[in-house]
Image (cartoon, rainbow, N blue to C red; front, side, top):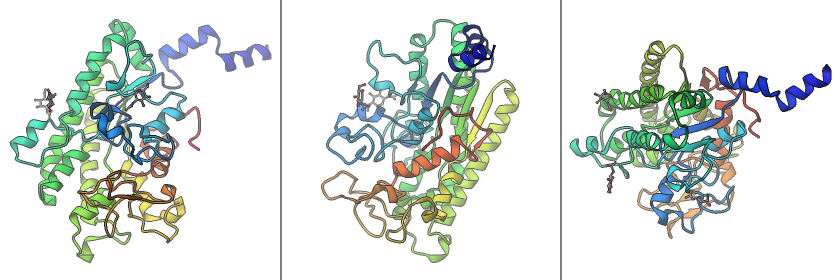
Length: 373
Ligand SMILES: *[C@@H]1O[C@H](CO)[C@@H](O)[C@H](O)[C@H]1NC(C)=O
Ligand SMILES: *[C@@H]1O[C@H](CO)[C@@H](O)[C@H](O)[C@H]1NC(C)=O
Ligand SMILES: *[C@@H]1O[C@H](CO)[C@@H](O)[C@H](O)[C@H]1NC(C)=O
């Protein structure tokens, strides 16, 4: 008897497996991700092949540019790893006949929640791409027939899949910051960004998604690119850690509004688990106590980008990481910031750990198969 039980746990008895995977799967069968450069694993790089040249991107983990805006893995890579899934293939880079049963990534670097028309109409600095969130949803719908054949099959499959809608919205906010809009003007766009996110989440629910993550946004007041662009110089605009307090307060407001909208969506869809990722909290603690998390050690400034050019943050909006004039730090693992806008693998690992193992996801994800090392 004992032997049989052990055998069943290790190899899962056939009938048990079916019951479990239909009703309450213990883990995720697949991940479908939508977003921007925070989670793009190769879509933009496939679209603009020149991006994937001889550059320091990917140098730490992949040893070559991997289509990711970091030196190594992103939060989404660590999440996939934790659930024993392969790193998500980029939708635009799929080859005919490729096995996509374990998920696909639709995120595109530079993507906005709102469509390009909005930025053009408002005469704002346009985002770098028109692959907005709704375009990514169209990609998903186009791919769907090759994922599952009919409603019953799709419902079953998506029931054990995890969907992530974001982080997205950061580039909408960036477009305003780059257009020199003030905080009051930033606040005005929040309801529209959130509406776009909720719209796509609602459509995914209609498509059969029952477990969906809607992440909040990062503490952009601690972002080296934002610190460089805003460069207010007014001491009272910074918090005790060196972040721009007004910009972080704005993100807190944004995340609070997003949470309100998520709560409304939950009430309308009792059968759906909508998870909020607190990227603000999970990232802010790194800037508040960098040495506790293995960064800085007093040798380097908490905000100094590893790859770039310029004082004081090693960021210049005209000199990109990888361009001839840029320099690269000797040890990316003690930097939080990678290239001004994006974080290092070391920072993303800690953020992912805080999400998967708690306490920065609410409600929490399923129990991970592996701990994030
Ligand atoms: C595209 O896929 C190939 C093979 O699957 C991989 O080697 C390559 O790195 C991918 N490119 C990007 C930009 O993701
Ligand atoms: C995005 O822009 C390109 C040209 O830059 C165009 O060919 C494409 O149709 C546009 N896509 C969308 C979804 O608007
Ligand atoms: C959200 O969906 C509604 C209903 O389809 C539509 O009227 C509205 O324009 C959409 N909003 C955004 C920001 O996409």
